[in-house]
Length: 206
Image 1 (cartoon, rainbow, N blue to C red):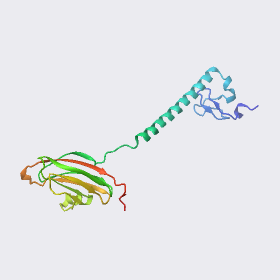
Image 2 (image 1 turned 45 degrees about the vertical axis):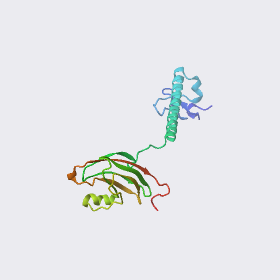
Image 3 (image 1 turned 45 degrees about the horizontal axis):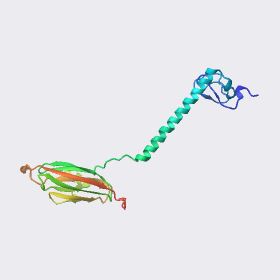
Image 4 (image 1 turned 90 degrees about the vertical axis):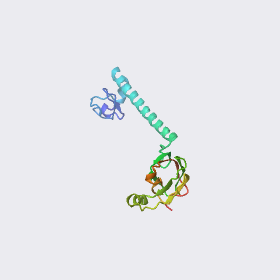
């Protein structure tokens, strides 16, 4: 008959209830000596058996709780999908444009994707306003020297459609311009609504 240290089965610590490897003389967790071999668990003192049973039950509940939490997180991720982050070029609102000045909105556009929408002067109603779109290079030139050329523009009008397609991926700045001279004191309020649309047939690298 093998001795305790030769018992090939795992025992348990008589103090904390942690499983103890075969042949171990002390508990690897708390350091208590004289672990109870598996074959002696049934006849161990009642207090020892209760501690071991409580530890095993606690571990089972803990493992089950973690499994349930992970399962819930995975199911929730599948059901809800990725977070929906609004694109800066999907927007609506009003812009106040002083005479001889501009108002801007901008965002990244992937090559082949497009931005659609409309704009209209709401105060004064149908006052002329121009809308232009610049790529990053053109906008930098425009702000630094005033020579940048827009990649898309509309004539000065009281309202119009926005249909802009990016030939390549870049950050594009849309510029609302009040064409009236500063002396006119004509402040214009413009309502703009845009929607970013992805062109699934064009990845922008062709």
